[in-house]
Length: 111
Length: 112
Image 1 (cartoon, chains in turn brown, purple):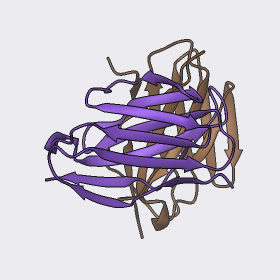
Image 2: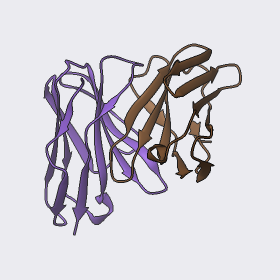
Image 3: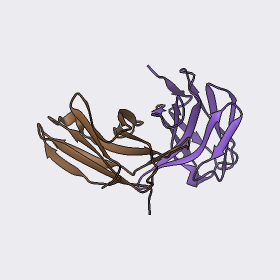
């Protein structure tokens, strides 16, 4: 079983809609959770980090964490074509200096 | 802003060559990482370092070594490059454990 799992997509949404990206993880003692955006041929860019259960909002992005269900999600409101990219979920394991990455969900926002 | 800089954006090397990939961060981060990214396989950790001269193997260390002589610099070494090491190599750093990692621009290495 992979430590971090994401649906590979592609997820297609129309411009202006809400895109919902999901991630599950296997290690119950995971403590830190991150979402990265990666455009084709580029390196991952940090969008958000979340450490506590609940929601965290930053502009059009909301991260949601549910540790009991071992689930973290990213909502993108008012999706734009420029949001079309692969979104990577990363999980930091307790007391370890490394992260596990999901394989990413490809998002297509259609004009 | 955090800046992680990788020495090359593109590299082409021959099989059997010794290859050095350099990474520098300017934010006094404790942790530095080397990943490779391949289609369908995602990001895989090769090595990481949590302090100067300290290193730990990641998930795929075979065929690689690393060096961290100074806090800001973390080098990945391919001892004898092989075609299956053709990949995108990504360096990252984080201020300390369990905090967000910031990535360099990546080095696309082709071994012929």
